[in-house]
Image (cartoon, rainbow, N blue to C red; front, side, top):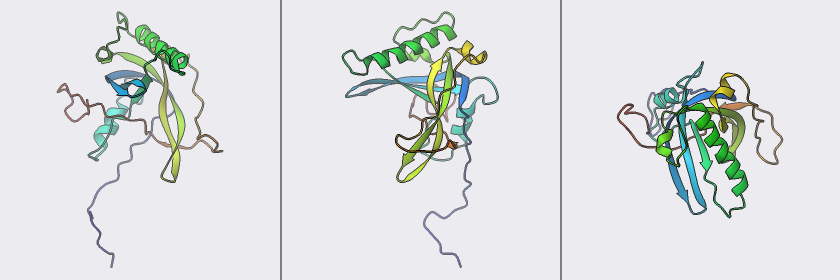
Length: 195
């Protein structure tokens, strides 16, 4: 006879699938600024807006039965801090984001207000990234950079290289999408979503 255990119940395992590496047209669903001792990060939550994977992250979130679920379609953007040793790299990345937002959304002009990002389109480029935690490792996809929507629609973007763990020789075999964030703000439209 099988031994009983705590929490025993019939519970379906949810297979969420993964978003393949590549370029997608996305719609921003929310944005917030997180403050750290070393500076600020803009966390941009988005969902796929066009193509075969339209609504991918909303479906993934809705199908997840866990109470501590997080929205997985995110891009984290460090705000350039003058005097930081990373200023030039962060400045280039942030300026590219501003360009992508303005080029993809006619009549939009960046004015430092992240709340105005909501409902704007942007091109997102996903890459494969290897992860390791508690002795386990595997592959996921993550949003590695943004671009203008026309570059995605016209296929005029450069795919990003896989990002293996440093110092480890591996092969690409992505399994899940682990890029996620807590962005909780509800306007009443989608009461089960975290924003």
